[in-house]
Length: 529
Image (cartoon, rainbow, N blue to C red; front, side, top):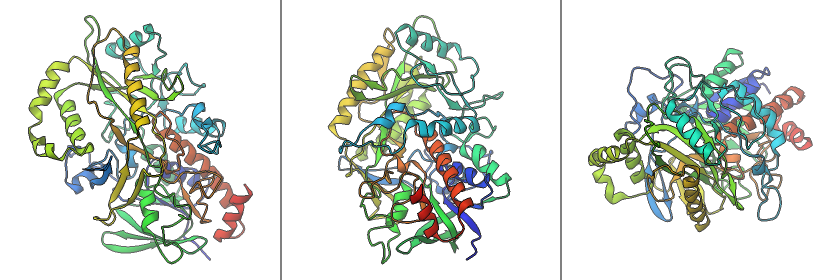
């Protein structure tokens, strides 16, 4: 049987893009299927709070609100997710940090390693991803050696906080970011970069893949169902501009994100898969993890003024602390301006489900201005706290909105306790500085969803095998953050990219060595590896 494509990839974010790059540069034919746009206008002003679906798509933002419950309270909001060629990297702040070697040594409740691979298995692909994404930063004194490029000098403001943290006994370093710092660089955290400065998945992976002549993009195309028999996926049923479209390939890769990928599998029921595709373990959609992130304002000491802070400073001193898994502290590059405070207040209302306050959102500018007057001399830092997997935290089909994203999440007491312990350590890092927390609840970072199709060697406890192939199907792979068995305490994007390059290399070798185009040959090859 002849296939037009060797591999069909659903989603063109970090995982799908890196996978496609690895395959296309190895000579294999790849098609990217993307819900959003392939091109973005530079002329339209972006508004993160806009509810206009078409405008959100033009600015690379997820077009619909997502729904769910947090501690049984309903929430509905626009998530901090991208949509379009580049995925969430279109609007990310480009912090690309490695997980710690200790993350790969965590054991699960059965006493077995949670990660079926070690740090040493990802390390060469971390290096490759850092090179392709032009990652700049300085060596983290608490982590293994990396090959990041030295960034330009910090602003006077950032140097002040860097020196202060160092004087407090911390080990600060220049946070690792996918930024080339060309003239006029704005770092573009939260927005599409139109200057080829911030390196997103589109620039680093998609464009080089297309340049090989082995890859193409079908944008504005929604995958509605993955069809499969008992052993393999047979086609993707899509809709583009109202027309139905069927895509057939040798291998299929899902990389739509840890919220959308499990929903696509759960919605793809048939006579062979009544509980959802590749779901004999009943783990598709379960073990949903986010990071918890605080934002806190820190005032400079003495006469130092806050002007043009960058996303420059990282601290891992509390990544693990007295037996607790915590995470990193980073500068955000933001000052406590009225617009930043206003955006924070609005998102706080949405993400915490404070329905009674939503009618007041149009009037929040006055308290935001007051807050800015109080804290306008401060720069904003953030934390990333590791989340832990629980089967009851999950993504599932929305009973009220077919095709919509719906999740259920319970904040466990251990997360609250670790959050409180982390907060007490912020002051240790910035002692002798005045500080103010911007919010007191456990603030879930919905842009860092992971864990909903975890990988592992045992089909009863994992959806995917060590090479990210579905245990149940011979030609289906998942390479977005769904595969994470733990969330780590750092930004997930670099680990997604490194793993996709690892799996892409494996698949490229598998495709090159196969004599039979059938999925059974791929299953045998994977099992042999």
